[in-house]
Length: 286
Image (cartoon, rainbow, N blue to C red; front, top):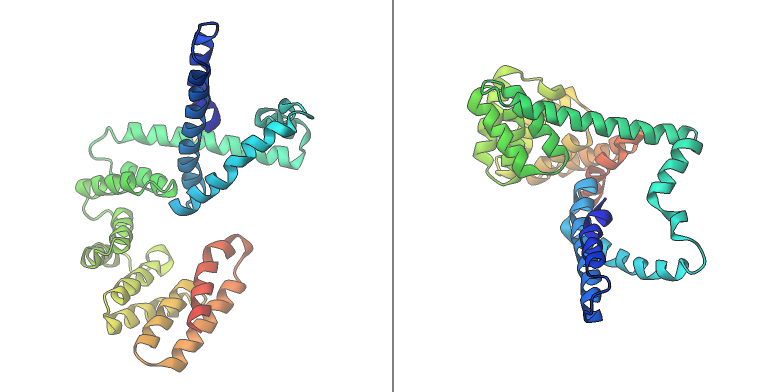
């Protein structure tokens, strides 16, 4: 999609100019501009899909760029149509068996997601519908568009200041930005309504926020409460281990870091990538 969006306008311009007596460098400039625009679009596409840092995105695009030139040599021996993503898509759909079903399922899920977003946009016309703003905020968070997510969460609590999901997400965003008191204020609203919110993850967030603030006693109390309820959560174990390390309780800290590593290793496969970060951090502490 990025390639088509980048090249189509310049291709149309090239066709419109075809046959006119123009300097060949103008055509070269059109081609170069389309390639540069494609690179820019790919930066945002990769960032949105994989959620990696901009540095990694720029490196990926820079390394991938020579493949376009290399492909020109390959196309001397094979037709470029044979590697067209559109052709490959239909080959998978009709001859891919299980894989074809997976691709169709992905397409259906994508359409459902787009429809959901459209319906929610319509729902926010109702000035009293806080939940619609929360759901939109979660969608934007998933797409790593934190600014737009923040805007919808703030609209949700403007409608209902006790909205529990919006306060939780706003607290996490505030903590990420270093506004720790604001984060704790939002988390307090959540705890007052449900101290087991998100399978008690609210206490992990509270403890991590106190840890960031250097309030070790409060951090320890919150994280101990969380670990009592979720004894094999690598993130919570890592945070509590960090508290014990800061308090000089090295033996307890070492035990907690070892538990964090073991919990990540024994986690379900689909969560291994998500939890691997805490295992690496715990190993570094060990």
